[in-house]
Image 1 (tube, rainbow, N blue to C red):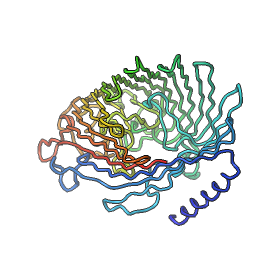
Image 2: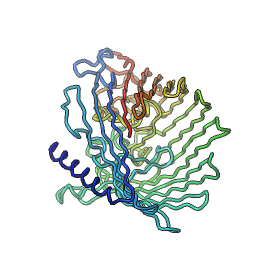
Image 3: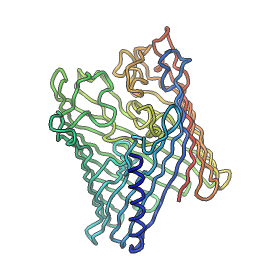
Image 4: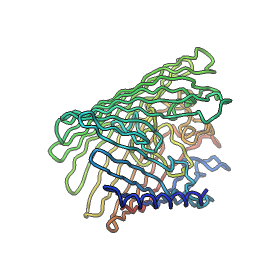
Length: 466
């Protein structure tokens, strides 16, 4: 596999090099990133479940991402973005080419052309982010489809269709053979002036295979053989970005999801209704030397047992990519990260309510330092007598831990610290570290009443861009 991939890459460069000689314009943009990723106490060591036995995982990874853009004219271009190298080593992981299962080798591959007065068409594998990405966002290369966009003065409109999942390759004997998922999106951007932008968006997902999108489908004790055979899910939202007096920045999004799902093996009426909502607000003051801000994030949670009310809480259609902090709602995890991302961690805002005070200073032109303090609670309680079980069970994808309390909203406090320094032109070092001091909702049954203890993460990046 490694030899074949090397030959493929070499052939690609040869073809591009020859083609560039006859092209109107061919540009190359790339990023080479080497990173250390360390986590402690997101889970416990299997030999002992006491609070003193936090599990440590840490490794290096590297990625070479290349974007090739061929522009024939102002009306026609083609773009390909590929991850040529995704390597991980450390923690008994072998050094191999593209051993990561995050995303895919080809992240973007599309043709973009403009027909005057009709609009711009983008066809192929492409990213899509609506608002700040709370209800819908995907930049990992999972969406293939068609986008049309046009603009009339301050009003821009885009309509999109994507094939999200296609299980036809499972074979005719599989129960979900030839079932797939389609997504239709509509986005309206209003920019009355350069300082203000209002975005209205919505969409519909027609799902005919597997579990529901995201991590939300099985959180609250649904049976293991539950199968979602059909779902129609819609969402609407509004986003805003504004700048006042060149010193105050305002950002926000509200999104609401709704729909119905047909489930087999439900044990009662197979029809369930789906709903959920998200709210994000951010206000900051800044000048040339610093930025100080306050941000609020709120995601709905399951309010009941689900089974009895035949209701699913759903916060997003595809993975939410909003980065709120370094542990809580931190976006996608590390390459080959052992952990998933459920119930307020990583790329999930389900059942999360958080308030963040943050600042960033620029003591010199090439250096920035940032820090944040985050208070967080569960929107709906977690515990052995609640709709949600122990929070770590959703994050690690198992049911190992039994909550000590029947019901608790207490998530905890997080403290973040980060920096970015430009070593030389094109080469930057960055640090992102965080410590979460869990609240009593993390207490569990071990050798009696066990406290979870602090959770921390450290992420070092060396990034070369050209």
